[in-house]
Image (tube, rainbow, N blue to C red; front, side, top):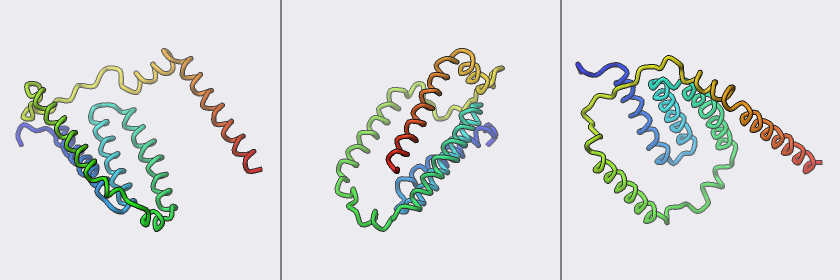
Length: 175
C-alpha cells in the first residue's frame, strides 16, 4: 500500500459502501431496512462529494435528501399499514422483463468499457483535482445572486404563489 494515499482509500471505501448499500436497498424485503440502506447510500455519496471539494453538494445531500426526504419516507412507511401492502399482488410475475432489462444494461456497460478501454485504466491511481481558488459554494452563490438574480426571484415568487394557492384550495375543500 505504498502508492495509495488516504483520500484514495477513503474514496474506495465510500464507493464500496455506496455500491453495497445500493444493492441492499433493492434486495431487502423489509421496507424500513431498504430506507435505512438508502440513507447509508446517500451518506456515502455525500462523502464522495466532500472528497471532490463540492461542499455545497455535500451540504445539500445531507440536509435535503438524508435529513428531509428520507426521514419523510421513513415516517410514511412506518405510518402506512404494511399488512395491506403485503397482501397485494407482487411483481414477481415480471421476472423475465427484469432479467432482460438487467441483461441489456449489463451489455451496455460491457460495451462502454470495451470502447473506452484506452482511457479506462483501473490500475491508474485516482487523482483528485486541487481545490480551486474560488470554492464551489462561492461560485454557486455568485451565479444565483449576481448572474441569475432575476430568474431566481421569479422562480421563488412562482413557488410562493403555488404554495399559497394550494393552501387556499385545501382550506376550501375542508370547509
